Image (cartoon, rainbow, N blue to C red; front, side, top):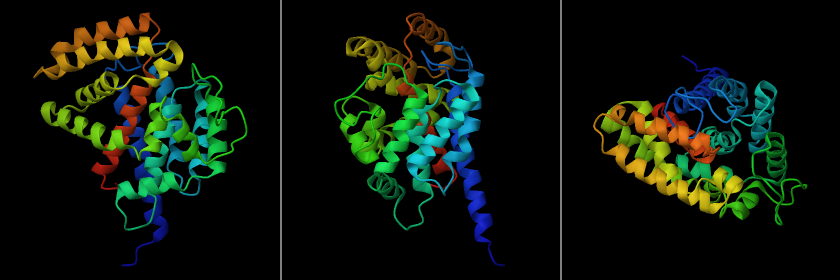
Length: 291
C-alpha cells in the first residue's frame, strides 16, 4: 500500500491544530488566580473570547506554508477579527515556534529542531511579529531604545527577543531555546498529573509554579517590579500549600479568594498563563508522539 504524502501532511496539520487548541482549552478549564478561566471571568474578558481566539488562530499555527513571522501575524490578525482584543499574543508567540519545530523534516531531536527554528529567523519574521504586537496592543508596552516594535525591524526575530530577554519571559524562551518550559514546566506538570491524575489540577499547579518562580512580565510592564515581586511572594505561599494536599479540591476556597483579590486589584498575570499554555501544547505534542 502506497502512502499518500498529502494525506499524511493533512493529518499532521490536523494533529498540530488539535494539540494547540487542546492546550488552550485545558488552560481555561483550570483555576488560575488572576486570569480568565471557567470558574470566573475577569479584566473585562470572558471565557468565550478565549475559546474563539483559539479557534480563529489555530489554522495559522499549524500551516507549514507560513514562515514563523507570518504564522504569528496571521494568528493574531485572525484573533483580532474574531474578538477585537488581546487574548492570546503571548500564547501565539510561544506556541508558534514549538509547532513549527514539529513541522521540520529531519532526524534531529525535537529540541534541536526548535533551536533551529529560532536560529533561522529573519528580519521579515521580526517585522511580521512587530506588526502583530502592534495589532494586539498588549498592556504596559512602551517604546524601546533598541529594536522598538513601533519602528521598522532592523534585526532578526531572535535578535529582537534576545534584546528583550532580561525583561520579558516570553522573549527569554526564544533566547535560551525554551529552557524553562522544556526543563521546568514539563517536569512540574507531569509530576502534578502523576500525583492527582487530574489534568485541570495539574494545570493549576503548573500555573502557580510559573507565578511563584518568575516575576510575571505582564504585571511588571503594567505595575512595576515591586508589585510583581509581592505577587510572586504571595503566589509562592499558595503554590507550596496547594502541593501539600492529597485532594487539591480542598484548597479551592483559598484559590478562589486569591483569584478575587488579584482581580479586585486589576492584576492579570498573563505571562504566567501564556507559559502554562505553551507547556501544555508541548505536552500534547509529546502525547501524540509529535515531539
